[in-house]
Image 1 (cartoon, rainbow, N blue to C red):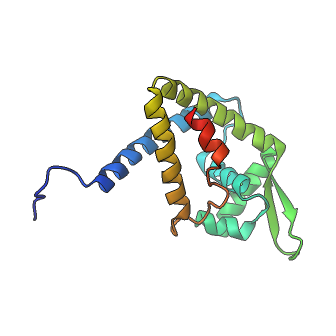
Image 2 (spheres, rainbow, N blue to C red):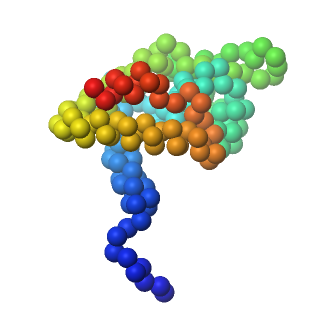
Length: 173
């Protein structure tokens, strides 16, 4: 076994560990927000489908299956449940009659907006307690992390998740 000769952690690994801790806290926050809104209760697996379909509107079922790295029957059941709730709709594919495309309905968008509003409330409170310079720095750092993640070849979804200058500027205010 080799011992580390330095007590200072590698900055990249230290940043990754800190980001991981934040992700864990956000997971808890998202779960609490999901439970704080009125029914229907939507499990995380179904929310993941809604997030992808929302960001990739009119996505083909086959592409969604690939992005989720799941078996087609499992994805079909997830979509069936969301369609039964009125959150997702299946649309005919214009160039292939055997395929369907998916879109989030107005009710689905409203449900996602309620979840986001709940979790944003907690985040806004925490951010408001930070000094302005740290909040501005955090905005820049998070935008940089988002860009790096979106450009990662390991991320299969993301073309619609680039921060726009308007989002970036508004967040630092």
